[in-house]
Image 1 (spheres, rainbow, N blue to C red):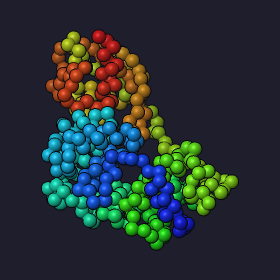
Image 2 (image 1 turned 60 degrees about the horizontal axis):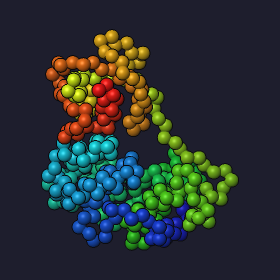
Image 3 (image 1 turned 60 degrees about the vertical axis):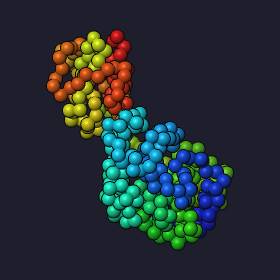
Image 4 (image 1 turned 120 degrees about the vertical axis):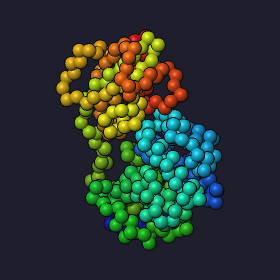
Length: 333
């Protein structure tokens, strides 16, 4: 599995002419580089660029440096993250910033082993940060990069060992001193040219050596499979003050530590006689499909692990999952 030796220079030339202006792309010597890269990498995990930009700008306006971010608290960070989803990233970002400030004097460790000990950082993010911050000869292999190489070779992604592939081609990949730009260029190229659907093959700078473009038998993209739908019953205590009772005491792993009403997974058709059925609706979190039966009852008393929250305005962080419940219940008033 060898690439054409002209690939890096062609992609870098394309990048120089076509890259997007993104707020986290600062000068190579900028003191903001580590902070901006760390923040953007956490936000961009499983989230599109256009969605991330306003959140990134909001964070950097409030927290000018990684040290300022580290002095914040979980409640404040989660509130600012509200609507971006995958909230574990926000908690990991805060924990990571505290460790970097306290243990590494606001610097990124040089060792990939040390970097991967930081909360929320795996192989991809560790390689990305080392390349983007320190210009090390590394490739951060995300979905875009896998697709670019897979198509260039016309070999299905699941049949490529990308670690071995990169090592085998390292003398071709790292022929310039622009390792940081090459990391970005590959990801940008996958996002804008070698797209999952309708790739721009005719105008692609790699089409002369791309086996996908030349082949009459092209590989197919691997689609992310959604898991089977799961059924949940949600029980909402509400009162005449337009409040709803929420708790963090639940056993649902993907909602752990979040304010939600009482929730139970069910494999059968629900029959909850003490509750009034409101509606059924669909929701999804990550790769989970949720089939939800929503119940309610007016009550002045609630279990001791619950607290009352306004259906309209809350200074506390409320996850999107719960906000959707708020919208359903608000129709009762």
